[in-house]
Length: 154
Image (tube, rainbow, N blue to C red; front, side, top):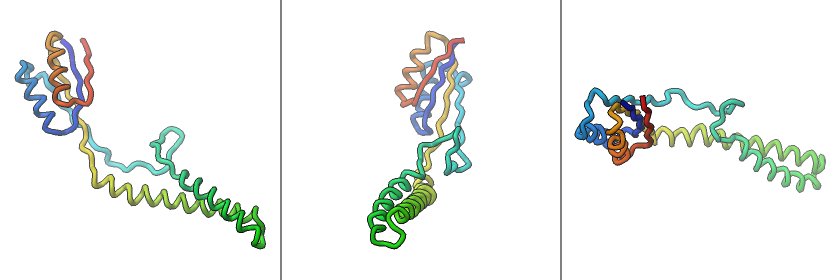
């Protein structure tokens, strides 16, 4: 006996795959479907040392800080405090402005996009069959757009 694990998106292809498996001689008792649940909590905005999602809130701040530093230093030659102080003030103001832009973008705009495009969770299918039917089962699963398969021989 072998077990074949497969993942599907929740769609009609899943139902077609299960009915095709039954037509190919796999009993209903040997087909097990497990739906995965969606995330209920929101993702954290700030990364930790152990968890990063690839979203950087400081990249726009660094770019604007650099640009504002150059502008502040250039204008600072004509102002009372001089180019160094105005360059540092420009750096701080640009960084804070860029950080706030990114924070607004990921908190408000991306959140609305995430709510509009809710992705259905995946479903794991476990099929238990004899070794001689393993290739047929995998072929049926791939034909019906499985996201991935794995075979375990027991």
